Length: 365
Ligand code: F6P
Image 1 (tube, rainbow, N blue to C red):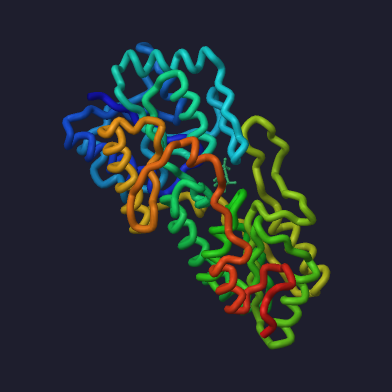
Image 2: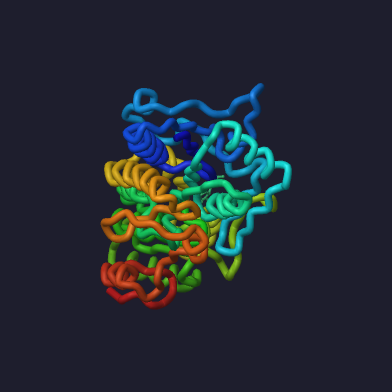
């Protein structure tokens, strides 16, 4: 049997582990694996311009430890990627036809799509024209309703935590406030876990409305208690007065988020008089080697995708349910986002630690 695999959307530590896991499990069954380059674009291969390579246990040996993806990925191009629960993929008919022609020409019995909600929605469209799709959920933001955790998320949390440790020592030395912007478009998981682990004083996330006044109150309280350094962690998707801060107004695909740390830094310095710097961790959270948890989860996702193919469960995605790999229909998987519960135990635990969410609800010290 021949099968294909592609990555789509933003990269994420652990993608190579998924590829290695899938290739190992497929090869053990005597199957041949086509790895498509640059996301769905690889499906637009022609005999004159092939955009795939055969993946083997030899050429995938130990790639589980490598960041990025050996296949490349795109979040733009001929297959419109739009994220969000209501995001709809709109793929031109000739692009659908050419994709189907490639799958038939290579004799593929299945195609594994490793991607976020936008990419899985594209997978669903391909499924509707008869392609045998199996999904693997992917996002650094950990905001997919399908699965308890996505690979790459805990690596990002580690990067945030490590950087907060570093930023705190310099902030302490200079008696400064640091505003640190982290990834998280719809959900504040990275800010929340990274901030708790790294000792943030204030965590601002898309799910919890905050005000400048409440942040200032917390900062002034800490100063009055003699704390030299103040660390504020903010998700790029957090809204200020209901407004998202963006780097451009791009409409095809996703808007590029960014700028909230710079904005808050200026405001907070002006109001409090405390010297403030900001730091955008950006793509450092997505690059580099996956931590062990993400390697293991990635390998398991790849192997589980192969068992779904074996069972003929097309139109399904793999998912992590507590400690087990399970599956669910892709439609169901993209239906809802996995957001931080505003009254969840995790948020309560952070509040117990004295962390403010800028919402006037924190415990006073
Ligand atoms: O969705 C994952 C994500 O990392 C977001 O957190 C971020 O807004 C976006 O991708 C960045 O995308 P790009 O790599 O296109 O700048």
